[in-house]
Structure formats: C-alpha cells, structure tokens
Length: 107
Length: 118
Image (tube, rainbow over all chains, first blue to last red):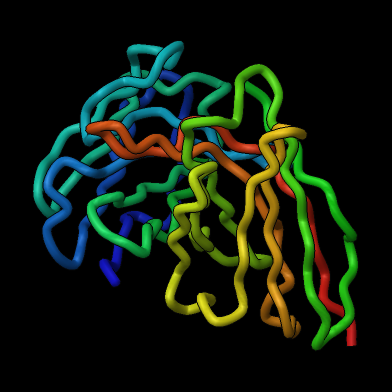
C-alpha cells in the first residue's frame, strides 16, 4: 500500500493567513493526488484533484501543486468557512489511501 | 448529485453489517461507487468500489469479508461486511468515484455511524 503522510497534523491560523499543508507519498503517485475538506457531520468535499485541478465551485484561494511524491495544498487567505480538517488521497494504485489529516483551527 | 446512507446504527459482533446508499440527481449507471469509513478519532479508510457492470475492487485488508453490489432499478448500491468486530465501528460514507482519465471522489454522503456491540 502507498502510505500518505501529511504535515502538520494540526495548525492554528487567523482569518487572512496564508496556510500551507504538505502531503508526501511513500512512492510515486504521479499526478494522482486529491485534496478534500472535511467538516463535522458532513461528507468530505473535493477541493482539488489530479494535484492541481480546482474542482468546480471551489474558491480560487485554494490551490495545489506537486508531482510524484511531494504535494502541497495552499489556502492563500484563510476564510472563516475554511476551518476544517484537510485530507490528501492518492488514486495512483489500489488500495486508495488517505493521509492522516490536518486540522486547521482558529488561532 | 446527492448520496444518502441508510442501515442499522448498531450491529452485533460476529454478524453482518449491511448498508445501502441511495443516489439522487443522476443515474447510477456508468459510474463507480465507493464505500469509505472512518473509525472514531482515526483517519479515512477506503473499503472498495463497485460498478454497475459488476466490476468490483476491495481493500485487501477487508476483502475476505466485503461484498458490494448495485441495484440499478432503485438507483442504489450496497455494502455488506460480515463477521464484524469492535474494530469495524466507524462512520461509513458512500461516494461516487470518478475513473475517466483522472481519478477522484467527487460526491460523498453525509455518513452514517455504525457501532458494533458485544
């Protein structure tokens, strides 16, 4: 199985801050890396697929970069609605696997 | 597209967990459908996928206990997990899995908590 490691596991930030979350794969996943936002009581929401493609209706303050084993999710200016847990996921090979999550909290 | 999980909230140990996902807003045909779970305080675990053609792919860690199927007449798909233990206590999500050049899950249900009782 491909292991996905996210860092940090949690962070505290203020509205307006630039936030960066990283995800590292134990072996190459090429471009097949997705990012999700997860809030309590809801299903995860797709933000970015294929490392850098913004999903429909996702605000442009979210962006993704990377290829191979190292990836980054950036929120350019954190908004009140962005406090949540973020997960990366690889779809390069089965079984599909997720990172452990990064909780973005209010500073 | 909306997905809604349904099924018992409590299952006895050693019995079979059965969940159904009802899809609305689009046909279930020609898509791949997945189940993912999240044990309390833990991360997300992909259980597997099913296609209306009958194609399935299960996580090897659960493969011996999992069966997924699709009912196109009801626009539903289902999960059966047999011989459950306390380790199977989790929030179970159903989701649509896109496999068409790019590969990602674009719609998720809200999830349903299933607790395994002794």
